[in-house]
Length: 414
Image 1 (cartoon, one colour):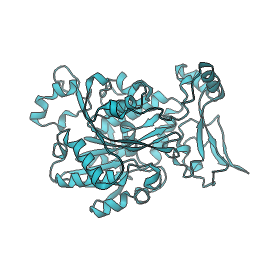
Image 2 (cartoon, helix red, strand yellow):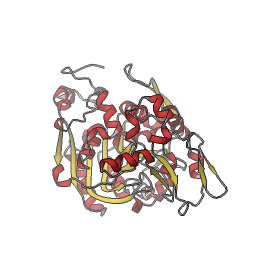
Image 3 (cartoon, rainbow, N blue to C red):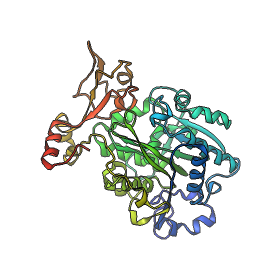
Image 4 (cartoon, rainbow, N blue to C red):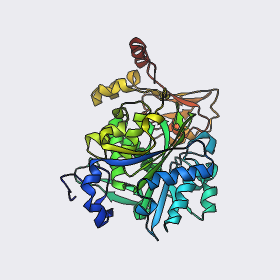
């Protein structure tokens, strides 16, 4: 890739082929200090949400900077499982509606697409309230079934990705993540939301390939994000999910909409707002090591609301397994049951729908005589089971050794 001002084109998440001549002339300056916007927004009343989304994008140059008349625009929300808007599993339909309305105003042709864990995108979007606003704006919902192979740069670890054809053929991809906790990656934000462009069972194949190694899985997520290169990301942080996310957690109002072109910068800013070290998020750690995106707060210019005014205290995180990740890979596998967190079934809440059994990549779960049984030796700690449980009946529990060590340090599990 051509370098301008000695800066690699993918350092700030920009694809030089997308830049106009005028934009390219200022590229070196822009990449030195990437811009994101944060707008305060309290509640999901549509007029308020539209104003906040519009202001967040206007601060970045307006939707016309990202979408030209006639362009096909993939609006890619996080459609994990069928869940109502109140549960906060997917971005709220009013946020999705605001983005689609602005795309249409710019002359773009929006469509919604994603690849949920088990169900169709249309069914999950209907339950999430997104299908209704899509129909209102004559915006189709597409299923990610057909795939194409996307090659990667020579210096990437993974040589290629098999991804949804619609994600590659779209003129513009607008990424719509929700701020949520995640049992495996700690948080699911902008970078990880692009994993939804990998259709169906191919997600399970990636989980099996990366196994219990979070760094390896994070490397895949970061490289996939860089290859797909969404033109714009708008993040729903009006109401987030904390605790047992990304499906069974509890709602936590954060009152903010974030937007930017660099998901690494957005994700890093969110961890800063949650008072977490930025390298606590696995994808940010990997992105920093690989010089993909900008994570250094000193190189991120925040437009709009002051981050200090929106800082969050005591955000509840999932049980984490940091204890294991200082060990060599072979030792992590050998002692994983002693040091890694594991999924645990809440029998009182479990309805034995068997979604977890169906989605488990390593086939470590089966229906027992009285409950779902988990083979912890087979379990690769991807926590796909916990992600898709409609009852929130699967919790991520830290290992006994991890809990003992944390008590000794006087710290809580999160």
